[in-house]
Image (cartoon, rainbow, N blue to C red; front, side):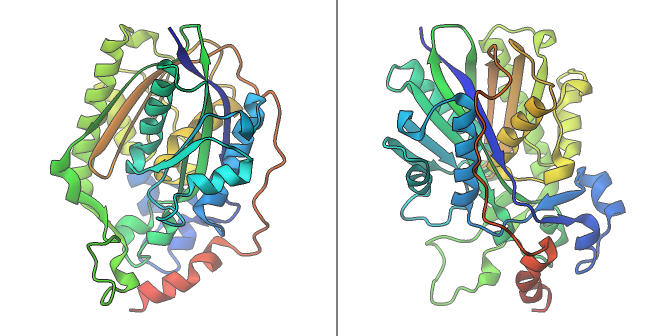
Length: 355
């Protein structure tokens, strides 16, 4: 039997940041209000398109795996904020990394990376592919109405990627579960799409809106249910889980999930303070951070779970391999940014906050 193991990883976060104190200069909020409710201290604001973030993360993941773009059999890019709807931006990344293979975008919102991880591992297990690149990348700042505190404080930009490779060892993605609850479809959404009247629509219609209390309940239920299901499916004892890497939407959600699953809090990888919610990018960025910090060690067992608009949910159980350091490093970088986070969002702030 073939397994899909993670052999490469890379992240890309834009250099400009927007702190809680920065936000307080144009909306009624403060660090004292945001941090206790969300766990967020700052978020990164991109000066480039989503595909550029994804391309740099991809190049770093390929270098860590010691392979070239031309070695890939498939590219799966999870995003809800593509540069273009037609063509997909996986093809942009493909061109940037010199790949010649299947390439497509998926939109499962914040669950997108785990959806991609599941699909990629299945392609390898079936024998269809040997090497698959899975990316989560978002530029959510583009969709924010900066006058709406409930969303303006939550989201940030970034990208993360992993390389999956075929192996005969029982390591890598041991199992995954995916689900969608359409009854929750309208509690987290952005209005952009062909349902809009393009002759009457304005940019004021594009913003993200949601029902926070309803999301909290459904997120805990969805992630908890699928996490339990994948643990049972893989016949793993909860005590044998070394790390939980959940979607980084809100630290309160993470705390509640971990508590209800009766897993020690110290086993949870939490990095939301530095990035905010980067949607499909949160989990691959957290994987990279955990490796950089020396948390993930060879042969450890990792549970990852997510929820997102749709209302999607996903969980995966991963047995890490022997290597926790990159084979090579990439010199790929974003183009220089000469603006602060406040300067990057100033036009949108003026548009939304002065309407």
